[in-house]
Image (cartoon, rainbow, N blue to C red; front, top):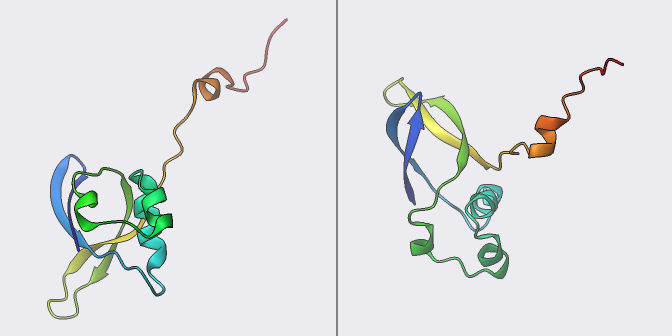
Length: 99
């Protein structure tokens, strides 16, 4: 079980998620480990719960309706790796050159 502090529009919120080590939701655990620098621990099957403390990363936030209250509830769709631009990306702006 994960308890996370997330930021939505500069407001801090608490969000809960679960990591599974079998079944169809295994991809989320793998992605969580990849974005937090623990892919090797995941691949070796040696991830311990305390190792998740203090990790940071990005996630894809979803919403679903709470069946009991009818209210919208935030949930984690997946953990994602963001492709950060390199300095070459900024230099290669595909602008035409004038000669």
